[in-house]
Image 1 (spheres, rainbow, N blue to C red):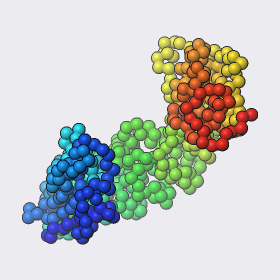
Image 2 (image 1 turned 135 degrees about the vertical axis):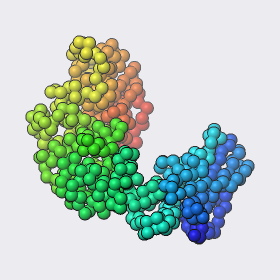
Image 3 (image 1 turned 180 degrees about the vertical axis):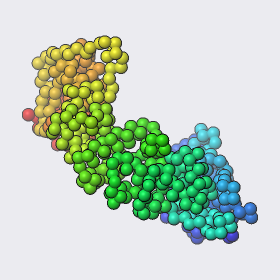
Image 4 (image 1 turned 45 degrees about the vertical axis):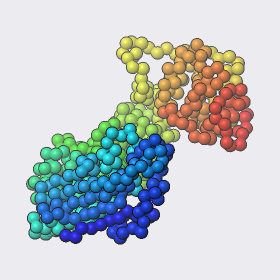
Length: 504
């Protein structure tokens, strides 16, 4: 077959089959973010070629130029070729340098810079190079032609081909490339078994493995275009959803809560889909929370909220709300919290406000659940935390001021300080001795009824002013603290950008 050529158009940042009007090296270098360096190597992609070799191997070659920069001047230009061989007959994909076939997210297309401290710069550059979709399309079309000699027909390929993994998938599982994409979810043994026993209809065998007795027609269509859709179907069923018209709203995605769905794993013994790593707790807690919601609300009612949550990365407040919900077993005992809190959890869900009121409620009835960072070992040793009332001087008490919607508060006792530690998810409770010894002052800032900042003062200076989980505060909160500090003659490094806030 004819060799196909694809040229990189640096002006439009696209790959095209027509030859480019320019391939000026200096112009290409100027498009990169290049900083002053003693020595660096820059890899510039120039041409991709795709052809079928006499032994029916589809070969892709990226022709690059390695430009050596010394003291910001070009000292050497070397031509390099990076090769990928797709051997369909043997189900093998190989590359030179070998890192070009590594399973990683590819992201650079116009150039790659390595400083001289990199031992093997070519290996690093080849690991992350982008393989254009147009090149992949042509390679797969060639592979389909070769497959015709084996099967007597050209296997269809309707998926969204967008990388090396899809070429590897077609070489290894040509009748169902998507099966290869979810290979890690299934496990190697089950993957080989389904491919072997499924024959020309591996989808049917796959549904059987996932215990999907009557697969809806829309699921097969979604699986063909996006293999993660079948994982979503199984997980959403675990969450309590049954209406396919609701479930299919979640199809055609690669992530859930910001986590890659291909990192899920299926246990055929328990029939459960779970996530690997720390995210497994988030997915397990969310499943439990969802089942509880569906006992009290309809699928149609909660679907928009669930869809919004899965489209975003869950906030710290959301994941901690799920944790407290699961550890307190609220789904098994609705009476453990006040009915108002329960109603807000049902109607509002995973908001910061619901998190805060749930934490305050559980702090009384389930303190061990609220505090994710307990004092390790002390309770087991029989130590009981005492409750000491703090004593403040008149000048210290004057810090409790109001600034429009903001109020500043000193902790009255050890118990309140521990409550703040739970609310802010920080270690402020450990400052108990510092407050007693007068080496530190701790102040909490509230916006109306919501705690928003935890402040430490030492020797007239604000040494810390942070939010939930020690996160950097929003500008408006820093501005408020700055005005409050100025009124109390405290030093604070932040300078306000807003108009001064009126002090009451």
